[in-house]
Image (cartoon, rainbow, N blue to C red; front, side, top):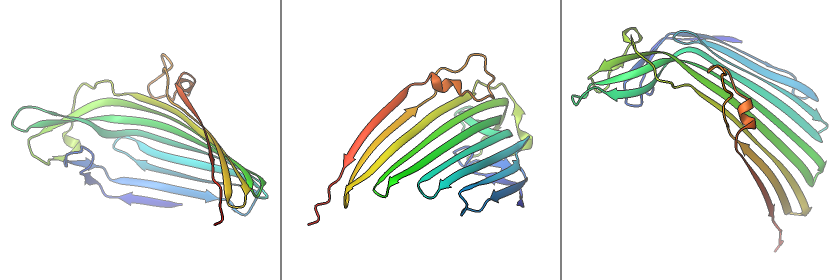
Length: 239
């Protein structure tokens, strides 16, 4: 476990044009735990929290695994990211031909969930099966639009000078599912056969009436999918 802190600074990458955007002083904490990796069953995890302009940025993940003598290996890893009150840039618009422009910001509340599943099974040293799946869900809710106008080519944009303005609808949601299964067979010394099945599925129609800040796993069931089957063989000539 550790505590971390940093003095506020200016980010020249935020607005994509070299403007220096003020970032606040930061104070955070980090915690990590791991069990004995030599055991057949174990776990590991981490968590961190850092302040943002008006809220906190939180990340956490846990890994659980089972290893049965090297023949069967299973693991699952959920990760969660939650950000609240972070004032972020989303657009820059020109005011007139003089070069004056307005930088638009808003409070971003974002949530994301990542689930990773892995399985390896060894039938024999020459025949193995591997599989993995990944589910990703995310949402972004933009609130409380603010702006600042400058004529300077690379201005300093101070948080205290941001003025309120109307905010367009910038809210987004995402949901994806990716997975594959790989069968590997060494049918002769140095000669290999691979059979691969993969599936990719994206976000479909969003659930009506669902809050902008909530994740939408139901959108996966309504999303388009792509399935692929691939067979590859190699033969060792031994010349």
